[in-house]
Image (cartoon, rainbow, N blue to C red):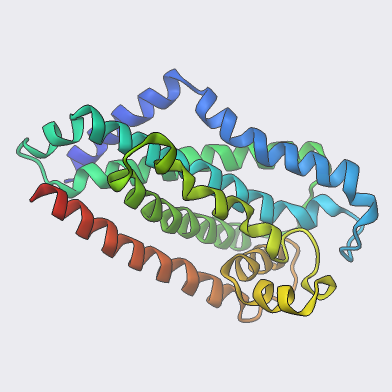
Length: 249
């Protein structure tokens, strides 16, 4: 399985590297949002920090991932509609390798996007006193978040009847950080909105990453963040695998 998955992963990554605008395009929107909020709205937002880009970055990273996983749906949809998927599954290979290649491609390409966003944030003044273990924990959370959303992306990639349908699911995910603690403290929100914001997964993930990067009190946020990511990933994997097997007949 490893060699087949690696071969298919190499194929998908070569396609991306021949057209690096995919990664750049995914990075542009969150970078533009970061520039807009820091240099236009930042002076009017009371976030309790002197450096707003530090407060903002965790949410921007989640937006970048949510944008990036949409391309998993596109790549999978293209393989299905072109007949390439059907050709792969008739070959003497483990069929799950086909899906895992797409998932791992998403993991690698989103990691590159995150690196680009962090480099831009550094130019904008982002600084962190986090140690190696803190950064590894941040990487673990972002990796699990990417896997969770990617397995969600597999479902429309297999079932959509059009390219627009394959990518439409990602739009709510991209804007979910706006109703969280990603841009402003939840205490500033109206009661109904605040209740939703304080109990949705993005807030726990953002709070955990923010605490790890700036040596704040992590508390239970990190465990709740891991639980949300793993829970979404398991459920999405179950339905994606079920749909894939159904397509195979």
